Length: 192
Image (tube, rainbow, N blue to C red; front, side):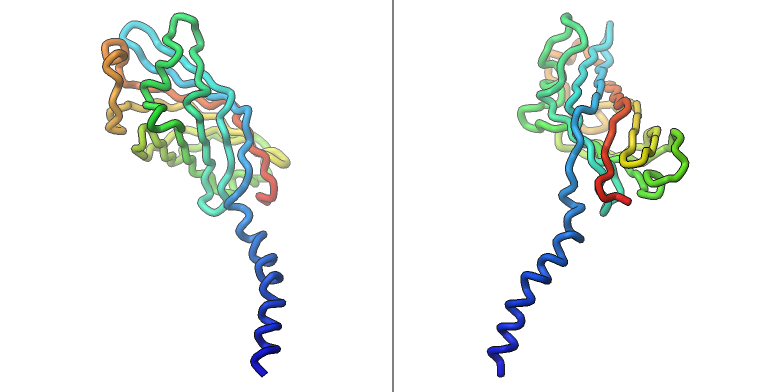
């Protein structure tokens, strides 16, 4: 009598696994790339601006956050007079290769039927040199039919992250960093 029950259990197991897979699929949502970010270090005499068009963006439905990952090796200086590795060095890219942002974004706002831009103050977690801090930043959202676009600009002080500035840049930098994300896009595959 036990043999048919076990056999039925093993026949049903693959079906149960298939039913479970779609519910778990959102945690592995794809990132969109080709999003531009500008990072400006305030200097004693001038600003030092870096840019990258390799910001990765995705929406995590479970946490209701926009997740942004910036590979520090993709940052390049906006001018020839800026040391090319300054941003990588200041963020200690050899030890912490990514700059991470997690922006609160309730799904109701992203699925809004009003297709106009709205700027909201959103709680954001920023991870620099392995230290995560929360701050509130202005974020402009523009929902579209199958995607959303967002922009933000905010400043941080490196000492709030217990971050250190390499000694060779200490005489020229103030510790203030301005991060600007302009019109980053993520396609909402299956968000609705």
